[in-house]
Image (cartoon, rainbow, N blue to C red; front, side, top):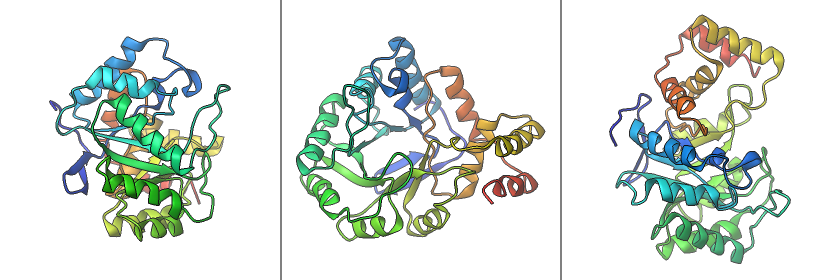
Length: 288
């Protein structure tokens, strides 16, 4: 790694310290995360620039494309730097129409882990998140069987650490009774604050919280408020929204995605933006 990122790092587990500003690879696939990108060389360039900037946390899934993002990650970065950590997720598939059917049967989960290992070109995956909820909100119910499958693969050495995606607090607690959880990846941003208590609870336990779609869900009024803060700070709404997440809690890790090197640099710059107290108060009120 050649860069030094603002925002600092977070230690998810022994031997797993990541930059709080990470990179989400979803947008490296084609439109609607389906099929190949229009410019594969540009996708490779974005990944290499991310590492050059100092990012050592890459978020992906073999069902992005499907298979596309993992293949591009391998092309761009393999053999991987020793301190680069790749986090993937299992629990869904892509069908021929581009839908996202669930894939939570034990055999499907085992195959998904093997597919990620093969396409990424690794012996074991740093972190595998079990995705069990809907597109945005958790679905109540036991996840013991599904998480137990991943725990077995961890014992076999195919997975180093386990995480969860789109889950509620009860499901986190249930999973923790089976095996350690190092991260939770849920829908959360300055306007969508349903997970506030979960963020704080995980922080107390030293568990990372990784919000996805950090700019989704704004109404015109809320966007106007965000734009106002950005204008006063001479910044952009995206940078302010990302900076708010970094200042919200030290266990929050960011994985904004982009297929543009320029946009990637803008996202990284957001990690250095410090929001004054009066502007934080305005942003905190958006979800109220």
